[in-house]
Image 1 (cartoon, rainbow, N blue to C red):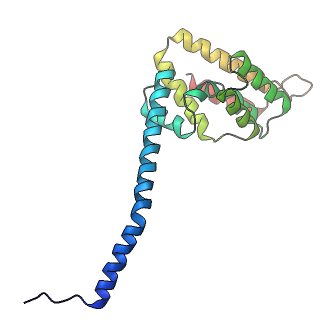
Image 2 (cartoon, one colour):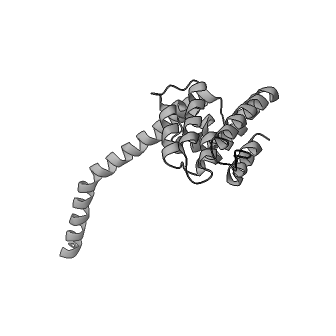
Length: 194
């Protein structure tokens, strides 16, 4: 005795599902491959960043990579505090921009390099607020790996450069050029080194 045949609607439904599966399978496989490539690239960038920076905290590395801070842009991240102070009042003026870019050149950034261009972009468009957290994580991780003397020197240098940006413009009769918003940012930066 032969099995009962399927109703015509079930055959059509199964045929439709098979057709749909064969139609979308290549796209799904391509998407899966792209996702795997993206994941591999992220892991490779995290490994590269770890090698250059000495950072081992996976959460810090992942945050940096998600924000677009790869090993080539790490130098820009060290100068991020200057950008944060420049944006403290909601805009970056010409003198603040010049002060930040002059500091970048003093630190050895090449005008045609990735880090320098990233700084220019951050000065033209306010960077993501998550960048401050990434910088703070970077400083905390770095602080665990260096001597207290080196950390103090690094903090002095960064805070001095950041204060120079704050003093680049503003102030009443040039007596106190640091605005209250800039001072707030400077205090946040100082706290990262504590």
